[in-house]
Amino acid sequence: MLKYINQVDIKFAPFSKASKSSRLFLNRIMTDKARLANPNAIINTVILSDVKKEPRINITYSDGKKVHIRTGDKTIEHVLTIVNKHMRKLQDNEDFAT
Image (cartoon, rainbow, N blue to C red; front, side, top):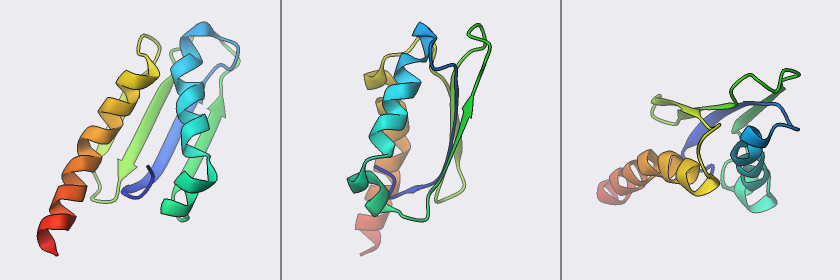
């Protein structure tokens, strides 16, 4: 999952119901398999003390594109769809180049 990602910034209040998809996304990218795909990926986590602040995920891809996701009203599946959309383009470009 991290192969084409240079940096991930996740901000969430851990006890907020709105932060569920952010917590699950963090759980997915912190697996050994995901980390081995790109050991140089930078993952920053900011724990918010105010549960009313909206959880966010900011991603910087290897080509410099940045995506900002407000995760409070999204499921983990929706978040993964957004993240994977640009990664598929990068994968296709890599496959085409070889």
